[in-house]
Image 1 (tube, rainbow, N blue to C red):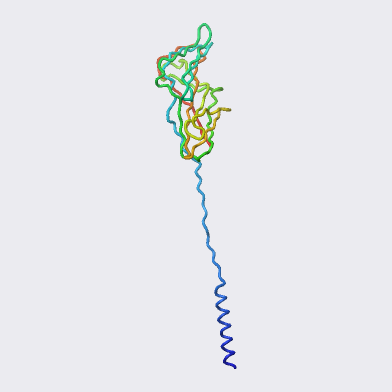
Image 2 (image 1 turned 45 degrees about the horizontal axis):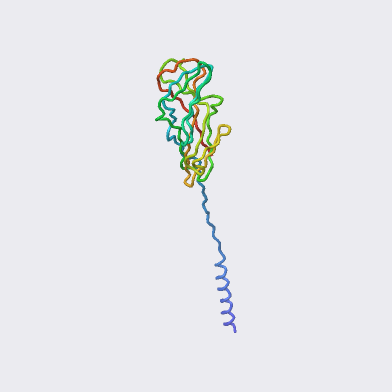
Length: 206
């Protein structure tokens, strides 16, 4: 009788030990990360070229030459009025082209804002590389935009308050043409035979 009681007691003790050893827990730290890429590439694929012109500047009037952003349209000139008008006549338009900019490595299918300078208030100037400081300049006074790559490709881009919007394609790319209207100066003066240059600041952002 005593021997059987001892055996039973030992079995209960072993069972209790086994159950207790399984009641454990473990903790692991899981790392987390996020990568931010707000940058993209903006490049000038081609610059403005208004061709070769004959030009005369007059204080009382302005002549204009417009190079459209839309590649399906032609260069146009606007004659000045009056008895002694300013002149802007195209002599050679072979090299004429709008500016073209490309966007790459941006977020796909995402609208981007194109911001242009307010040339309606402060025109961008193209000045002679040589000659006296009194030489008249040419002035960029207006812009047009046309999407060539992107979700809104082959469409004019409306400009409101000096801004337009282009949407990237499925690869995060977009391209657009920038057209402009160039006018003669608002002074009486002689344009010298020279190359007239300047620059336009174009900002693209999310």
